[in-house]
Length: 402
View 1 (spheres, rainbow, N blue to C red):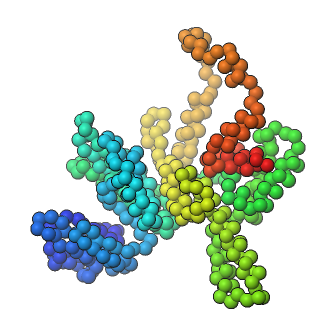
View 2 (view 1 turned 30 degrees about the vertical axis):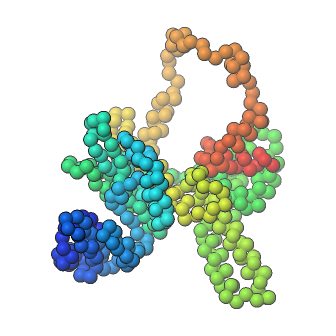
């Protein structure tokens, strides 16, 4: 129980008195243990928590102990999975997966990213009946994710058990950071009407240039614009909420306009914040209009951990974790493979059968038209990742329709 605030034990045959003695012996003070005695040969539950931990028992039965906690992470064997790709082998019933996922969402919890082998439990490995599942995991509240934004879950190896042990690391070693910021268009900017006017006015001033030059100029201008119009959305929401709280306690004819203006501003900021986190969460199965900011924030935090590179294999299959080497290895790799090579290609090309007709080839080589561009752009989700120029599909969809 080292470093743990709450621990639970299931299927324990130990009597309640012995459990209380154990709690005292392990520096969990007496009284901070709850037990459900076994019936005959089966069952038996025990829950321990530290004196400094704020929790309360809601109810219990032979099969559960319901505990209310705040700002916590929960780790262990949940005996269920959140999606079909968390199981390898025989399929699990979809209603079981959906039921567990709904319970997690109803509890306002989100997954803590796990590194290493993707499964934590196995059965009959090496046979045709082999099954692997991710039954063990760690979940946390939004506030916990904010307290430990870099936390990861490590999937360790086990010499005997059919469950791999998992270890929650709240503060892993820091890795390399970008030396300079890279422009990325925020779809949340489009909530502000001034953004559209700003882009249109500046775009017309660029003149007739190559489209990439206009986009580079637009990116530079938007970067400057965002510093004064979109500096810290979370801080703006908090400040507006405080002003609204002060005014709403004494609304009269003298400040009713201020009260309504603050409410309108608060609604605008919340929509903007929701759009900001939706773009980072990459959750396209929720429709627009749902203010699920906390949900998006938690998903974006977990997604950032998935995208974080902590180690790589170099060309000699050596594991590198050094910050400088982690930045240099990918660069050296692509420089090497994209360098011009002195080789003869004709013998290879001559062996490839022609599979494209002359008509198809003419169509493929013909200049694209604006309708094809529109069709491609509007077939994409607006929150998809931006291109090399930093602009998301949402930018082109918004201004192409004007």
